[in-house]
Image (cartoon, rainbow, N blue to C red; front, side, top):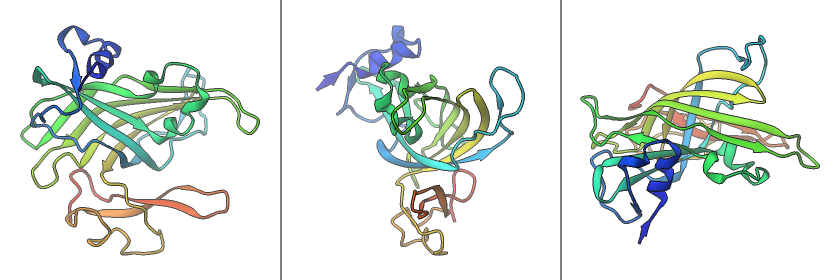
Length: 237
């Protein structure tokens, strides 16, 4: 069944004049992406947080890692026109508190149709993804903004569309910081105390080099951890 997601999304990123339609059952272009909400990403800081208005230092930073949704949409009439979308859990988890358009909560950008010489498919610029969450009885109002750039999906036959890398500018309540990111699919939960938790029997591609990262801590003090790439992408043993 043909949908209008592709066309509507490209309007948001300013390129709708050259792209039309979207079909969930369309054939894949060479730059394959594992469409799934169950990716996990690790963020590596490249600078210290500063106030976005230039007013000096601040203390809010991105989480060390989190779940993200990564999806690709193709133009069924021209597979050279593709769209990459990213939705981080940091936005999805509070999306219901934002009365604005849900389309603003997902990063959208054009994706290359063919891999480069190193088997990467580039999405150089994605729209900013933002949630303006209203206050509740237990949580203060907050605004979080993700700006992804230079996202590259690894498309080699050994791991087609299951690892990616890129850059992130993260801004929360006016405090901004920059990161490199490395992500993989699928997100596998792990125990930080188990040295073999992300090994060949973890459920990951057995060739992946991964380590257990605590992305947050539950109110009772127990860690929430996932296997993330331990090397630069492509992260292989």
